[in-house]
Image (cartoon, rainbow, N blue to C red; front, side, top):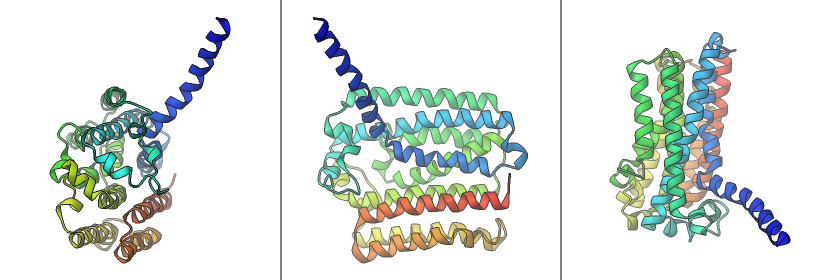
Length: 323
C-alpha cells in the first residue's frame, strides 16, 4: 500500500513539469518572450532621468505583469477556436513533419490538454492581465485620454482576434494584429510618460509590422484551412497573385515607416541607416517568397527580421537617448 502510494506521488510529481510544458507550448511561450521586447524598447526610449525612476519602473512592471496574462489569453483562446472550428487540424497536421512549424506547438491537437482546460486557463489569464493593467493605470500619474484609449483597445481587440467577436474571421485580423503589436510598445511608454514622440510611434509601428509580416506568411500557408473554417484572411479573400501584391505593399509600408519620418525630420536622419540590416532582410524575405512560394520559410525569415529590427531599434535608442 505504501509502495503504491509512493509510486502515485512520484508519477504526480513527474506530471507537473509535463503539464507546465504543455501550457507553455499552448501560450507559444517563445513568441510571448518576443512580445516582451516591446516594454524593453519602451524603457530604452525613456529619458535618462526616468530610466531609474522608481515610479516609472513600477508602472512598467505592472504593465509587464498584465501583459503576460493578456498574451496568454490571446494565444490560448486562439487555439481553442482553432480546435473547435477545425482550422488548426487542417493547418497543422499536414505541416507536422516540418521543423519550421512542428505539431508539438499545438497541445490541444496532440491531446496533452483539453479545450475545456485551455478555455479556463485563457479566462484566468485574461483576468490576471486586466487586474495588473488596472493597477498600472491607477498607479501612474499619466492617465491621459489617449493612453487609456490605446490600453483599453489593446486589451479588448487583441483577445477578439479569433475569440468573441472573431475579428480575423471578418477580414480585420491583419489590422488588429498591426495595432495590437504596436500598442504593446506604445501603451507602456504612454503610461510611463504621458507622451508619444514620433520616434516611439515609429518604433511601435516597426514592432507591429514585424509581427504582421510573420502572420501574413503564416496565413498564406494556412489559406485552405482558414477558408474551410470561415476565417477571412487576406490570403483567403484574394488570389495568390493578389496576396503577393498585399505582402509586397506591407513590405513597402514597413520600409516606408523608417524612411519617410527620417526624410520629414521627425526622427533622426540616420534611422534608415541604423535599420539597414533589417531592411535588407525584409526585402530578402519578400523576394525569396515571390521566387519560391515557400510561405513557411518566409515566415521563419520573418522571425529573424523581427528580432533583427528589435536589435537595431534598441541600438538606436541607446545611441540617440542614452542612459
